[in-house]
Length: 112
Image (tube, rainbow, N blue to C red; front, side, top):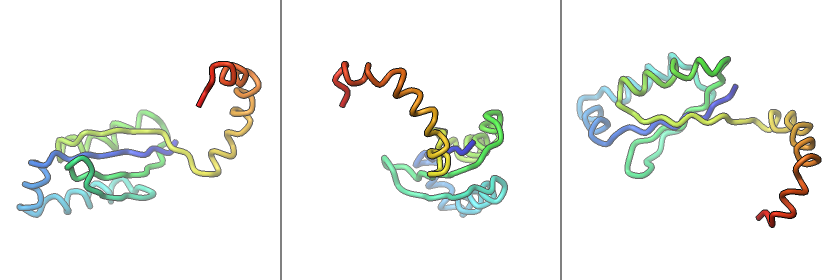
């Protein structure tokens, strides 16, 4: 199961990590361990924030990938299931089934 994990590091913790040099080293150590498909880092809402794409075997793997960020940086985490274009294509039959069963409800409710 592919997950998009958003990692937000509090400013004070990030600043300490920048000053003492530990922030980039610790981030790299976590990424080396987790081996994400991709990782991007941005400033969002005034915090150092990472978007990490991971392919997990089970939902029980979420704590394994979240805890290093919690413990190292007191980070807040959001984990969202994500699909590749191939996953979305494979979902087609389920989407079509939902349209057949519930599509008329959306039309009658004036969906956007």
